[in-house]
Length: 129
Image (cartoon, rainbow, N blue to C red; front, side, top):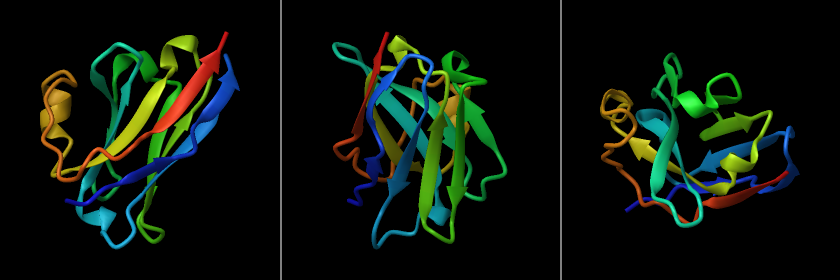
């Protein structure tokens, strides 16, 4: 299966910002919605945001609304997650995944998803308070 590569994580102080990137060499991302997910230490994986294949629709879990923005540049075959005003609770490994659409993820309350790619290694975001 195709593996998407999330990158851009790092250590940042609370209130700071980071931009994550999601790329997939040899795989056309514009055919898919792209979801961002995260897994905090000792916790399960949770959905964070989703952007439709054409970028027209963007969805966010309540805990990140107003702080995170997802976007995509299909010409560069890359999807982004801009994270601002970061909180210690945002500390997690972040993953991106290809979806047929955002509908199942959003309508299930961010708990159900069928991905069309492997999870990959993710990128670690650590927010210090």
